Image (cartoon, rainbow, N blue to C red; front, side, top):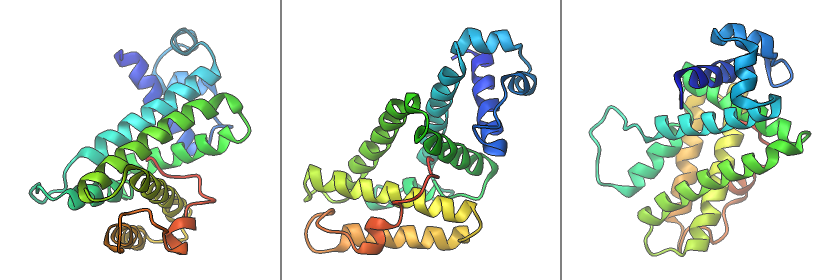
Length: 213
């Protein structure tokens, strides 16, 4: 990806996080990115194309920061890898806040703009698949469908916790504590993950729009 294209997407993420999708103006975005409006249309064709590529950018950036190890030494513990990947979605940093807010805005926009739905479904599926693979390593005795179901619940919970944290309803440390407990509930119940989650885990993210983080 060219430096100019990357800077446009970075600026679009910042702008969406500040003002929402409805507040995104191509002229203002061009000024913030230090490029011409014609260059934005050259790279992205139209506003819908810009939003789709911004969604990809946000997802890729989240993949990057959730793959980074904690300051503590890396271990060979698959459960620790799973916890780290999910807990890093809930960091009180500028990058994660910006990413999570913009992801939520784009998810909410897809309710009203069908053009975004296919791309959103694809990026969400990739996220769920990645978490399911981490679950499979942490619980090799489970089945693939059970791991996929557990991954759906955990990623939905991340989105639910994110919107409560970012809207001021939940301190980030408490959100992380709840997420850690949900991971434990998935891995420690009798049988493989996904054999019927507690109601609080299964439903916590059902109305949420933020996350991806």
